[in-house]
Length: 492
Image (cartoon, rainbow, N blue to C red):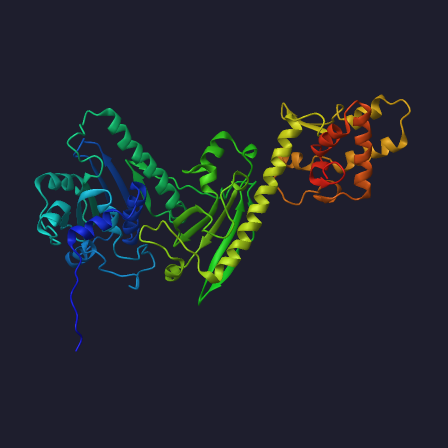
C-alpha cells in the first residue's frame, strides 16, 4: 500500500508565484487575445479606462463563449496540462495563461461569458483568496463590477469578457484620478500594448481577414518584421528541417539599407524594440509570434549593429512546441539540440550577408562624403540623376593628369585601378535592389597578388613624391579602396 502525504500548495503562496512570472502588460494582454482567437472570435476589443485607483482594463470578444462548466475549468489554475489535445486554433498550452497573465496585472479578475444570450460570471478576488486561504471562486460580482460588465456585454448574445480591476501599480490610495502624469503613463502602456499586439499577431491578421483586433477603438494593423512586400528585401530560399515526425520551416530575410527606405518605412521597419533589438530569429506557432528578434542563445551569436537587417522566420508545429521549451509566458524559446547546428549555420550565413551589404552601404556613403584620397570614383544623385565622376583628387589620377611625360606604367596602373573599382554597389543601392553578387575589386579580401601589388606600388610612389613619409603613405594606402581589404606591404 502506498504511504504518502498530500502537500497541497498554500493558495496565497500560489497566487504570489503566479503573480511574479514576469509578464509585461502587453504580453499579458496578448495571452488573453490568444484565448479569444482560440474561441473563433471575429472581433476582439481591448479597453483601457483611466479612473485613478479604480482604473480598469478589459478584453472582449464575440467568440463562441463557454458553458458554466467550461468557465469554471477556464478559471481553475492548470486545469488543462501541456499534453491536453487542443483544437487547430488553440494558442494555449499550460492552462494557466488566463490566470497567471491576469494575476500579474490585477488583484481582481472577472470573466463573463455567454453562448446563448445568458451571461455567466466568475471572479477571482485575491484579497478573498488570501484572507480565507482557499481558492474561493466567486459566483456573483459586486455592484461596481456588475455595472462595468453591463456596459461591456450590452447587446451581445455570445462571447467572453475578461475584466481586470485593482490594477497593479494603480490601485493605491496615493493614485488620484486627477494625476495627469500617472494618467499619461497608463495610456502610454496602452500604446505599447498596441505595438506589441501588432507584432505578435501581425501574420495572423494578414492571413486571417475574418478576424479584427481593436485597441481603444482603433483597428490593429499587423507589423511585418520582414518587409515582405518591399522590392529590396533579399529573401533567401526556405529550408525545411526535420524534427521527429514533423518538420520546421526556416526562412531568412536581409532587409534593405536605411538609405533604400523612406523615413516612415525605416521607422516602421525598426519595430517596437528598434533595429538592434529586432535582429535575429522570429519563432511562430500557428501564425502567432512566440519570440521576436532573438539569437536563441546559439553559440557566439551576439547583437551587433552590423547585423541589424538580419531577420529569420521559424515556423514550429504546435504539436512540437514542448521540444522548443516554450514557457508559460510565450516569451522564451530553447531550440531542440538536433536543430541547433542547422540554425547556427543559417544564422551565420544570414548575418554575413547582412554585414556585407551593410559594409557596402558604408562604402557608398564614403563615396559621397569621404576622404578624397580613398576612392577613385565619386557617385552622386542630383535632381534625380545619377552622376558618376572620376575623382580628380585621387593621387594617382592627379599624378597622371599633371605629369606631362605620361609614364606608360603610371597610366596602366590608373586604368587598372579604375577598371577594378567601378562603384557597382553604389549604383545598385541608388538605382536597383540590393544584391550580394557584386564584383569585388582585385578578387576581394585576402593577400594581394602581383598585379595588385604593382598598382599599389605606383600609388605609393606618387604619395612619396608628394612629400608623405613612408609610414604616412602606407597609412593612406591602407585606408584606400580597394587596398583597405587586401593584405600587402602597406599593412604588414
